[in-house]
Length: 317
Ligand code: G3P
Ligand code: CA
Image 1 (cartoon, rainbow, N blue to C red):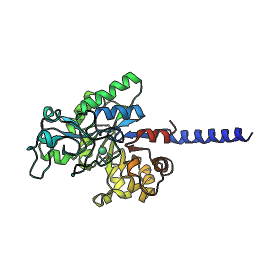
Image 2: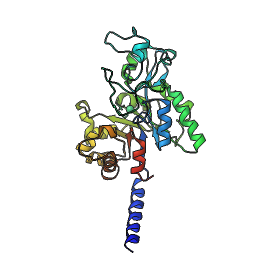
Image 3: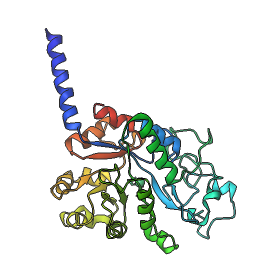
Image 4: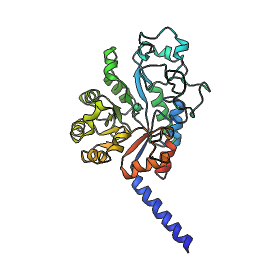
């Protein structure tokens, strides 16, 4: 009898979690960065298989104006460019993707993110120098996701981020129209297409709107003080004039959980970043606990994570 009561309570709790979890999304941050080198096709495929609803590529442009999946405007944190093209850095010591053609970039190998001294950022992740990964183009990433959608019957979306668009424009490489052209070619301009576009620069998102896109735009909000104006109700009022949602640093939400309600009151969805087992804030005992707090107590609509499988478990999938 006691066991049956416990079983019923367990089932009721599980149904409760599933009801609240409905509609909440998981964004595979840079693919499945907790398990495979970031922004690679292998990482995107793994993030897909682990249950992501959306996969995130960060986008920069090559010298010949092709979008590649890369977090930094520099190549050296995640590739062997220093060994392959030792003399091709600028005077500031960085190897800029915008100084290399796609054909040149395709000769590079991608590795786990390293610090300037060559040591890995996350020592317990995929081992340095093992297996073989190359820099993916955005088109390859899209074709991978759409191919998997066809072969699995799922409808996983994409969540591209334009990286440093004002800097790219200063190099003669404007990003916004080019992005919309690529997306239209692959059907992401159609109503209901599973896509968000994200950026830290409001002017770039406003330009995308002016170009006529109806794709939902997400204003990224850093915890850096230069973004403090966006942490306010007034800041959110301004964002709601051009964006459908916000992607705040999770620190902003942690410092002021009301921030999520303020955004919801303005019709903005909230997708904080970034949730990592190997970068867990001291107040949480586990990544599961942190995600539960954000999904169910702070009531965010989704989150960016390097560990898609953990989020899937938390959402009861
Ligand atoms: O795009 C959300 C999050 O990825 C922003 O931070 O530095 O990982 O691109 P970052
Ligand atoms: Ca990003």
